[in-house]
Image 1 (cartoon, rainbow, N blue to C red):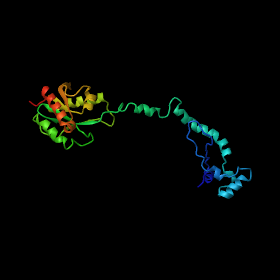
Image 2: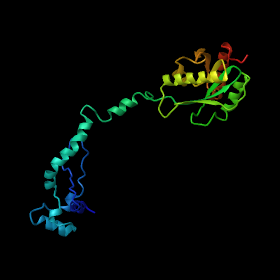
Image 3: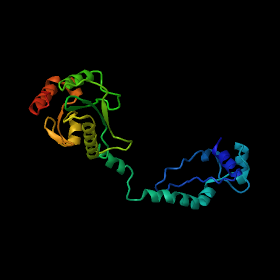
Image 4: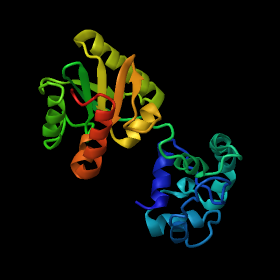
Length: 257
C-alpha cells in the first residue's frame, strides 16, 4: 500500500495522520516517503485530486492530503506532541554524556559476587572461594586440594556450609559483604565450635573485603584469621602460591600442629 492510500484509509477511519515536512529541533528526521511519485503535479482545485485518483487508484480528492495543506494543519499538533519530549531531554543533558560517565568508573556501584565453601577441622574453619561462584560447589581439581588442607586440621570433607554474596538479588558493596561474612563466621563458631578461621581467597577479593594484603594475621568476628592464596591460584602456580601460603600458615600457627 502506498502512502496516499494509507492516508486515505486512516482518514476514513476518523484518524488524522500528521507528517512533519520541515526539520524539528531534537526530533528524528521524518521520512519523505513517496510523495514525489504519488503527486506528480501540484494539486489544483478540481484537477489535482482527479488526476491522483485516476493514476494511482487512490480515494477521491477530499481524502488526499497534500504536503502544503498538511504542514499548515499539523503544526499545532506537532508542537503539542514534541514539546514534552524536548522538555524531558533538558538542554543541559548532552546525549551519550551519561553513558560515558558510567563507563569511566567500571566496577563503581557494582557489588561483589562470590561464593565461599566452609568446612570445619579441629578448632579451625576452612573457607575456600569457589572459582565459579555460580557452580554448585568447588571444581573437580579444587576438591582434593581442599581435602588436603582440611586434613592438616584433622578434618574430613563433608557437607559444607556456604556463604553467598550477594545474599539477595540486591548487589552488596565490599563493606556490606565484609560485615555479612563476619556475621556468618560468628554464627559458624557459635553453633559448631571453632577458634580460628583460615580463608583461601583471590587477592582482589581479599583486598576488597579486608583492605590488607594476604598472609597477614588479623581478627574476624573476634577470632584469629588468616587469608592465603585461593585454591585456583595454588593449582595454576603451585611453586609460588603453595609456598607462600604454607609459610604464612606456619608463621601464624595455622599449620595444624
